[in-house]
Length: 512
Image (cartoon, rainbow, N blue to C red; front, side, top):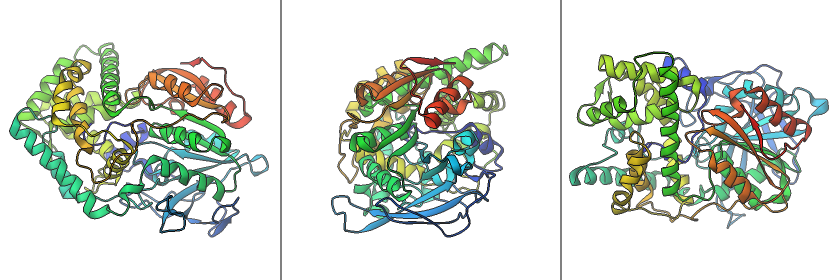
């Protein structure tokens, strides 16, 4: 979890499955339906006009893959780089949409953010569109690369080779020499970000991204923002509601970031969340087989990997930290637990790490051809400009025992990742995000009891922080990161009734 700061990255089971077979990525999906043709001009409501054209294939920065095909359109929206200077320099936001199929009953646009921070909405939405097929009947499905992400003035840091080398550095150092190496690698990464992206680093914060979303709302011609935020997208949605309560339409926050926690508290909670998911995986596996690896087997493997990384078919070595992240990647959805079993069996029985390394690549944004998306640099840049806290080695050491107790597998990595923003060239803006949204329309807030990345308690705290009459909490009793994309019929009914018919669920509704 030191590769992508554990702020909450939304991963789809399809993306992991495709990464494991190395045949495609989740960005390369296609969708049926008819497009509106190239150069479609979108009327605005006080915003810039959008010129929609056929979409190219996602770029390397967006994660690569195939062009989304028929039915998808892309556009660019100019917005201020610095909202303190609204008439100053502009950057362009990359947008994608699929038009509503039932134009006669169209509600408007439904804007998605799939999380990260750092995930490309332009690359992700087509691959997940089947999950939102019913919503597409009455909504244009719209997503975007937030500022600093993908093709929206994407943050650049190290080269692919430099990133590979950085991933081999021991991310849970045990002695002074290893600490010095870890800090030197962290500084080298930060220096590269400052060198290659100095102009945009101060302006990739979540508040600015929320202001961008209001520009998107106006540009697509909607009086209200209809929104579906997942993972970090829930934080972005909460911040938007705080800034523009009067502009909130029908909004769903799924896999909710706890807005009350600082980075240390968030990392600790996430360590517990991933350990809970791992424990649930182990119970499930043991119910099917008598030879399933347990936490003790995994911690022993990780200890061996510190001293001797495993060979892989990719020609790279699987390090301890890559194994930790690979295990975490497989816990984002129950659908990929089988890949975790395969990866652990390979490592423990055959002494090779090919499958765990593929899992690591899926969460770190590394494609089979060795190119990285800008997920990692965007994640770091957005997190560090948002978060005021800067932690020291002494801070980490003071809390290591607590993190180890929370999770013998994930705790140390989560603790040391607190160093990620130390020395960042831009000062962080807030201790915790402002999400109070008095006067906003009801916002549906969904918590999954088995969510490893955004533990369940965060949903209740987000609902409370949004304000009385605004946050409406819904519970899903299940496994994995998020709830709607599980396909649970109850959850589908609750969310679709709200988004399509405006039926606000009763607080406390439980599915699963």
